[in-house]
Amino acid sequence: MHIIIIFLDGIGLGDDDPKVNPFAAINAPILHQLAGGKRWLKNTPRTETERAIFIPTDAQFGIEGRPQSATGQAAILTGRNVPAEIGEHYGPKPTPQIRDILAENNLFKAIVDNGGQAALINPFPPPFFKGINSGKRLPSSIQDAVLKAGISLLTEQDYFKGEAVSPDWTGEGWTHYLGYSDAPTYTPEESGALLAKLALKRELTFFSTWITDEIGHRGPFERGVEFMQLFDGVMAGLLETWNDDDGLIIITSDHGNMEVQGNRRHTQNQVPTVVIGNARHQFAENFSSLIDITPKTLQALGINHNHHT
Image (cartoon, rainbow, N blue to C red; front, side):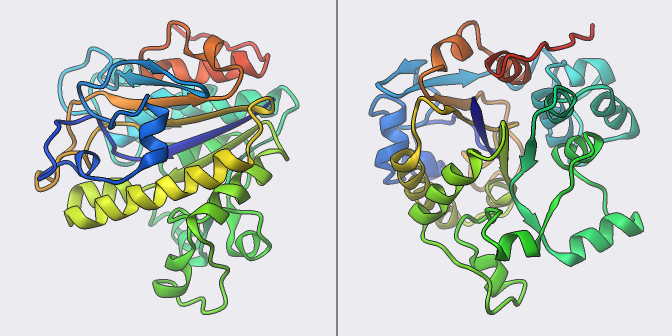
């Protein structure tokens, strides 16, 4: 069983308003197909299609305030109500208390401890490692969970070898912003096909992008539309290459943000979770909040999940 988790930071289910919500404006046939021909909006119900189940998902966990990245990601990766445990939604980077929770057990660690393999499939450039090693930069909850499991983060060498997928999917960030003139670039469809291929090497392949959250905070609206349409192409390539017998593809997020442009703050909206693959029914059963992701993923892999109360 192979599982791909595609984590899009900061996408929620917002209003059907094409002036503020990119999801109300995008031309994204594949994404809409995954929700039964509907847009990913607040009023889109839980929907089952031929290959997928679309589930509006609680990111609030009964705690007041706007959900934040550190606690949201930690809840996704531990199956624990992290905001309740620390008394608030917190972010962007995890506190020592959140790091302790991630160290106790997390999705990556549980897989490794069971003899399996897992990876955060995005590569990081040298300045990132320099920042982490000097202590000037704190890892996110996702990065921290990977490191706590004893898994190395991927480097630009992995990217050049075709063993990693860029957070912008196409790799243009490596050429435009990081100055690697010879870095590989991909069409969205090629990038999706590459992710499908790489996922067959291990039990869990976790893709994470912060770009959606950055667009939520900074805009512009057009970039939100453009990025989600690009992701539609990625999903076209991924779904064409992926065999539904091989495992599950899960798309999810930690909190809303990008669906309200011009606000710059996180929202309290539900987030979308999409589960694709022949084992999707068991995964989706009683699934309602982000806290369900880790136990359901481990269940799909046949691994016992240690519940912490």
